[in-house]
Image (cartoon, rainbow, N blue to C red; front, side):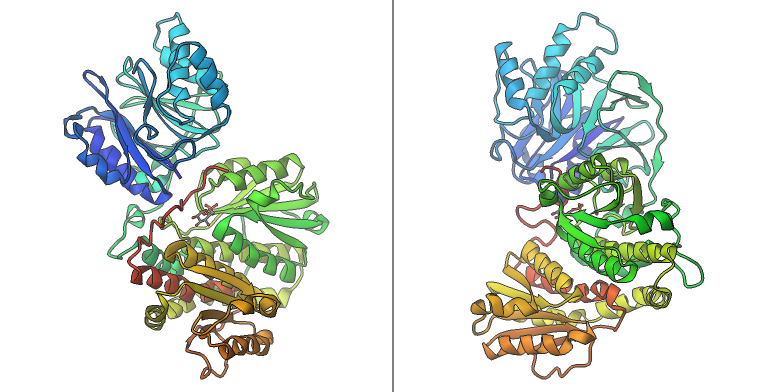
Length: 612
Ligand code: G6P
């Protein structure tokens, strides 16, 4: 949601900025723009619509500046339009700014600036920033090298809300300033050039050395240097982080879409996430954690808080934490949890799952739990992401960058990691030895079984062809399979725009069955041997009413009554979602392709939801 890119170096900035924006397209946006410093002052090119349209803007070819900022906007304040697109300049065209986040007190600041003679040309909250910087810049009587930095710092101290900001100034043609609070921003260090981005994959092909800013920290960049300051303008020392992700992991690598590539990367992502943490001979190891038997025994509750697909991974986490570790576990959507005064105290462990580590509601929920005295643990895919800087502990999936908006490999990696975490807890608690041994064995076999499951893709594609024009599709399951039904239904909605619902199969008769009519499609998941008969009876009820049925199962059942059965490998029920979701990911993918949609960038959705 909103992307920012910056470049300062020896090369022409404009193509680098536009290419960077293209790599951030997956975050979701409706307008794009860039600003560079040219010989005659600041340039600004922007419009609503796709990033590639920027190439067509008059004057784009004439930009030669080697320093610039760029932005993709996802409208919050003011509709998508040229005026509301970023960058925004102050009235005197001294400063150009791009901003990701929301300035909550922009009305108050706007009134203050209007009273001081400033005029506004957009409906955005962002436009107050360049004007406020200009206000402080003008008031500052000292004309030293830090004047630009002081003005930005003073302006940022007045801002309430969230921001990642890049700012250039025509009086400082060799410098760029960046700062952030609660919104993502990374700085990539190159040779005689430096890069800014909202996330790592967009600039991974240029550098592996990244700097991260904490809230309210500022960085002033030149071609060769990066200096860091805190909010009192005291100089900070920072070490770069070396990111191990392979640059090709942010490319399509021969696949038609990132989503398909990421679906096929799941065996590797699971292998990497298991890593050295789990083996059959020794106890699970998390070097980042120091939980004791005493602490775990004292817990009254675990909360798992997340959004979207990550929340569905949390449901699989609840299943294993309750059944294996016998700890009462609740799963909550972050945007609800925050506002319902949750019963959290020092005896609660709060786990936050987030692929990006930047989801605004999840981070806010984490801060709330910290205030209430709970221990907080972040489970994320992105090293150094905001959530890891807030949490007491962080553990990582090793899924590599996930580019497609619809999450696939991040989900399965989250499920495996929380399962390994539960094993780690059970081993500390010295319980469930036999179950743990079996589960470990099954986990180590998962990558191979995932490969077998992916080989079923053709049958799924052929069923998808039969149903891609449907208006409604239902998903049913019981127990752990119901959590997979939820995720399958979400995948379908996200990328095919088909209306879809998921239900615990036992709830059918309490309402949803009224919606079942001739030829409607019902997808069911059956992996729990204790629930086979109950599930089959529920499916029969929909068949009787004319439904077409797709069944994903690892059980030996009479398949003749269903339109299509996808037989996946048997595994431990704690980790069955990792296999049973795969046919559903492919199902959604092929339906979306059948409809000719943009699989990786579905309408209205953003990969990283950085506003509340
Ligand atoms: C957005 C994405 C989803 C993701 C959710 C949570 O809605 O489109 O794919 O599951 O945010 O994101 P997170 O990065 O916190 O896992």
